[in-house]
Image (cartoon, rainbow, N blue to C red; front, top):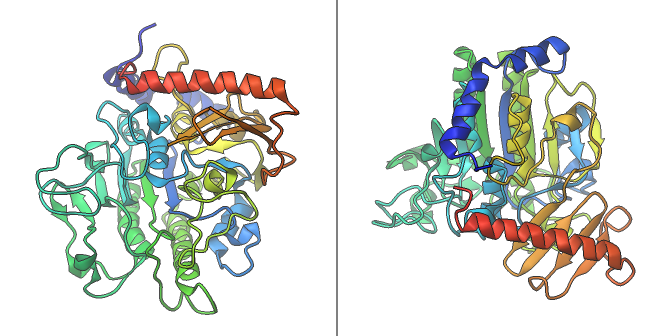
Length: 460
């Protein structure tokens, strides 16, 4: 069958606004009576071991720890890529970013023909907001800004307000995690709220995670006041370099005070977010997802931990892509759970759409790399139906429920690991398990071919 166009997809999603499937689910007790609010939170370069609940020896993250105790803690949650821009694209589209040309950080942009989660949810009456790091295209072509914004440079202009977001407080790329007086203009990466609407210097001072939440919470309060469901994408800059912090967040830390302090400050904002939802009376029917965009940097200024996983940021070994992953949704998740099935940022889009009653067809629409986790939330899923594919520059990987196939050289050589027995990837099984390796290589090549066809524009 012919692929659905972007217009057709959004039209079909709009039908859901009055779809009786939602009311049937509500009557059956498997779905809240109103559309759930959705919050996607993400840290930047936070390692698998950079949380208290994963036994960090020093770091304070009480609010993330509390989420792990009250909701779902994903033991094998994967960022879409080992660097930031591609992962962010996967969050919003459910598709691997090689399908639309975001190959690495500061590379490509989210194309207008892509369907973002914000665009799809707007057809269902959702109010949408983006707060923090964007990194999916430039935000201005009038002045010099950040890594790629420049006068007359429209090649990669793709701001969030052109991709479904009603309210924005967004930067193109990284910024300091703490602002001192006069550093905003000198650093040269600005916050934007709309076309050529640069946030003034007088509004940028202090902890950056707090500034982001200062803008996100009024958006949430306004939506709650107007009785509208909302999507809030809150993408913190912490703990990406340049890390900086101050008291009280640095209090009690004897080393790496800026790094630990900016994570503790971000953690405090997660607690502030949840407290506000409670005060507004909308906590039960709001799902909050939290993850990191990739593994830790790992140097003297950003000494993130992988808790023994091999590799770091930029690597497709586990330390580069296995990240903290959490979900709280009191209306649906009544008790805490640990999920050991591999899950991914690719899964956000199909999960949310499935929860709202839209089942993405496998044969009549563009390829999606994510899986709906709605059956998992209903305790009807404990294995992933399809493996997760990765590519990043010369590296390739394929991860299924047990095994991981890895190539450092675009498929010239391969390694195979049993992630259940060997999460640290110390024992290469490529010689011992030739049948497993051969099957996974074939699946990986099929997936790579699908990505190449998408990149050629066949999905549009």
